Image 1 (cartoon, rainbow, N blue to C red):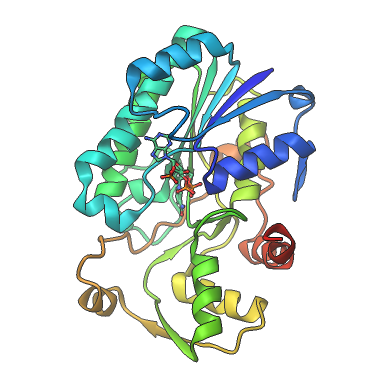
Image 2: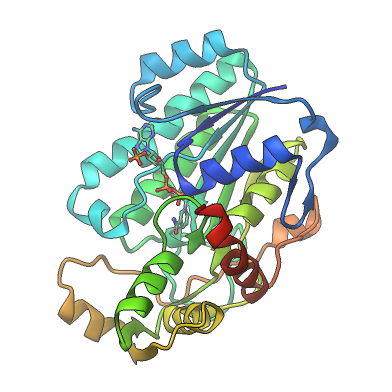
Length: 300
Ligand SMILES: NC(=O)c1ccc[n+]([C@@H]2O[C@H](COP(=O)([O-])OP(=O)(O)OC[C@H]3O[C@@H](n4cnc5c(N)ncnc54)[C@H](OP(=O)(O)O)[C@@H]3O)[C@@H](O)[C@H]2O)c1
């Protein structure tokens, strides 16, 4: 099997490569179909996924059976002030990859986000609940889902949230840095979601992609919390003596006027996983605890 992973330098891209190399993730073995898989990971230098011709040519000569798109413009605030650029990366580029996968006869995985939902309902969202993004990031990612599904008949769209991996920038590492430097940090307490380990997500993506049950999936670690709860768990797990001061989104926006609007309640339920390959996603605190234990060694 030949697999193309775009966004190879990103959080998810790194975990996919690690798991495919090792044959297992932190939550178990991956399907036997991946034994001896040849993995090609690209970054923007090797393959700029916004270049439709380059994508078509690269995929045509690559002989890929599976393409997993780990590339995106993930800076939510940055997307707000550069929606055109975000649209090219988050919407048009997945369309390019999906079209190339269709022509090549490959399966395609597009990764998406909880931010496609408005966050106005106080219950975890399932896959076919109505979308309604409130940010440029959410709008462009939703357009990416639509283009992917329209262009490729063997397409999986996997929505995840609040992602952290061993390589790259994320909320956990930011809190650890601030917690080392400061006595207190102020964190939003009225936005609720699901912190998710990129290692667990990569595991489930590989299980899904071994099937032919195409369509939309939710895939987050189990349990819902606020950013402030998440920050407190990081401080506690990392043994940092730093208080978490809770604030509202309104207070945060007043202090950070360039920040994008975010959904208030964007928790997802992994309903489709439950009904297909099985939902192995751990409670978020368990996944975080493994991550904090492994991080020093991973960072070498
Ligand atoms: N991070 C989260 O909290 C979160 C939450 C929900 C969903 N997701 C989704 O999960 C997926 C993986 O996210 P992640 O956190 O692993 O992302 P990430 O760490 O930000 O990595 C994204 C990668 O995409 C690359 N990239 C950007 N533009 C590109 C282009 N035109 N051509 C090729 N590569 C390009 C980036 O390269 P450079 O580094 O060189 O720019 C980066 O390596 C994304 O689809 C994201 O939308 C993430």
